[in-house]
Amino acid sequence: MSYLKAKHLSELLISKSLTIAVAESCTGGALSSSLTSISGASSYFNCGFITYSNNSKVQMLGVNMQAIETFGAVSEKVAREMVIGAGEKSQSNLAVSITGIAGPSGGTPEKPVGMVCFGFFLNGDSTSTTQFFKGSRSEIVSESISFALEGLTSMVS
Figure 1 (cartoon, rainbow, N blue to C red):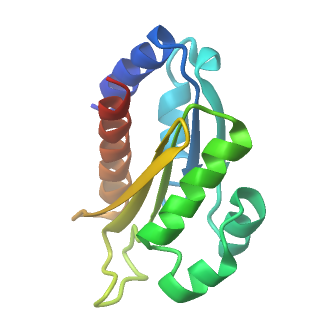
Figure 2 (figure 1 turned 180 degrees about the horizontal axis):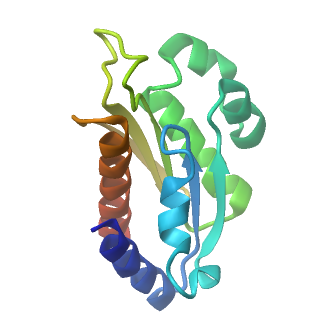
């Protein structure tokens, strides 16, 4: 399923001569892998940042540590700062960020397992959203990738 979504997105990116960057935390590079599994990925895939730790979010993407301390790494504020950093640092047209709690541990009543925040960036404009997924760790990662691919596709369609 994700392969078909990634293939459709890749065709759109190629047809519109757009490039993409990815900033991943809880998906650990799985979204980048799905995007680069398509032949011809070098024409649209610019780079992927796997920023699992808070320090890497700050150092690689320019996320403000105060935002992490105030809102938490799993927040729309941090997802938005991640995606802006990915888009600007890579000079890509399109970018996505994913930060969340894939489980099975790490959740709290305020931020349960399955809470995933996304940032989307297109030509300098950014937005963010939060989704709540159910299932095992691998299912939450898979759902996160699917949601990101759908969001990116709708942005460039």
